[in-house]
Length: 117
Image 1 (cartoon, helix red, strand yellow):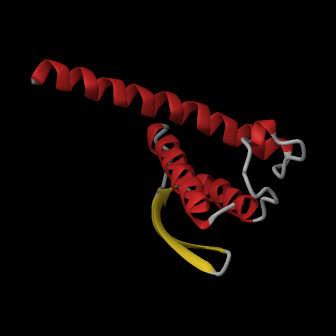
Image 2: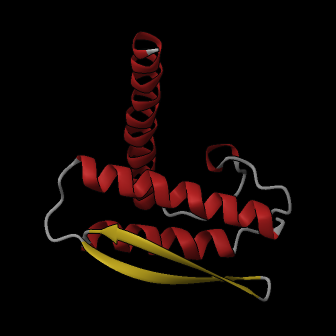
């Protein structure tokens, strides 16, 4: 996977997990600066998550760093998934929730812009 694709995957993951954590009003969120290394490059991100979501995203970073595919398939279509079953289901729940929430936010903004302009 290219560095640009890796960075895009990490940014999407951050957005989805933060949306889930904030939307479910998890307790004691804290801001952390995270360094993720990939192919001799370091990427720095600020994330604002509770401890449980932080554990989930950290696990996902590790799995994404070690993904053996040059062209990364969607994890649900992968013939040899890296995630253990429990973590995969947990992340699938996060992705489903966040995709719906982010999609609804996008539609709401378009409707508001339509009526305000």
